[in-house]
Image (cartoon, rainbow, N blue to C red; front, side, top):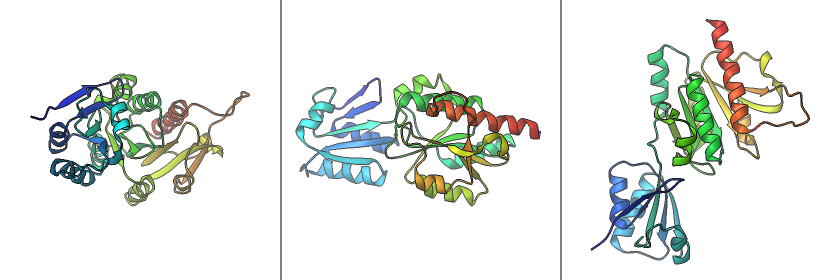
Length: 255
């Protein structure tokens, strides 16, 4: 008889066992990653692999040693899944929310934020600043973990977060809906000189590399944040907060 195990850690929801992972997929739970024992080809494993591909989860084939490192129970049966602590939204949900509020869309897009504390802080800022949602990429970025939820101080319960496969393609699709994009860069024009009103997407780059080249090239504005000290960079969540509130300021002035 197969056993199923679901454990919450400080970082995410870990689901172990073939039945448990299959039921998670079938129930519609958002699965971020699946780790499968390399070389295992029986029927239930093939079904899990098929479900992972269908739901666009990141699929990793690993050895016994790696599964032993990941398991919380020792009873993984050759498969372990990492699920989001919270369900993801759709971008259409965010646009609908803006429409219901009678506001121009205000979205925050994150390009490779890997620190869950930064993501949680940005979601908190997004909620307070009145943003209609946060968009994160699937790869090379943190997902909706328990740490993110805790750091958001409850904002994750109210602010939709969507996960997309390709951030640049998503920006292109949103441009067709009339949304402009701005990102922060120390060499950009002062944010006080830019018109940041109207439908807008604020792009925040990763902690170390900033905004990637392709994403930057798809931004309509490159905003510089005035800095007076000896240090020339801000924490990602702080930079996002500064720019978010410049957008808020300009929107309030326009009213």
